[in-house]
Length: 282
Image (cartoon, rainbow, N blue to C red; front, side, top):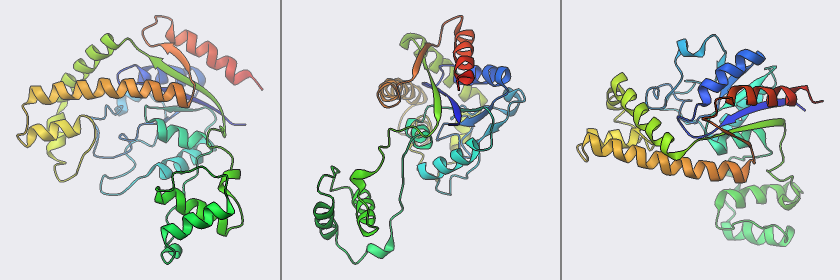
């Protein structure tokens, strides 16, 4: 089974710095695991690593898609799995939990099939309950009902599918936990840096887009005159802190990672030793 290293955690927890050190020590390559950094136009506000900061380490899935073109979790899943087949020591680094899990675990996505337009939702539900009575899904969810209905037509049952919590790879999951007081100060410092680097001008050039993204959304509100710059900055920090709390809960419950103190002076050596042990296991 292919071995994959994954570094997760909130923004400003030190994922990027750790990933560069690890990649150098292990001759690894980094795969971006941040859903925002995929887009070409979102650079400053997404804290995207700059070329000179990559220190010669090969990075994948950064700035690969224009905002005007949809890029789904399914696209990410397929792109990552293709890369995992080609990279000797792959390292997925980011905080987009669903994206990362979809690539590494048995998540399956199915597009809506136009062949079913003549069958009502209620008829599909009835057929599913008849043919697959033990299936427990939200029958108000159109996508899930369509998926289950497709499988019935194919002669199989969705209830018999392998659970999506089954890993498809041998994964070493690293979660960087960080004191919330320190995280808040880091977020404030990073935001000030972003504004100095031109974050407001970046958002100004993207006003035609919806931008429902932390940071971009609040700066757009400022540019529209809805809030002051200080109010926008305060809101960004508040939302980022709430999101970090949710992220931690999600990762711990969904992926059960190895948790490391992001502020530990021996963090790199601790992680390196554990990862080396993981890679050496057959």
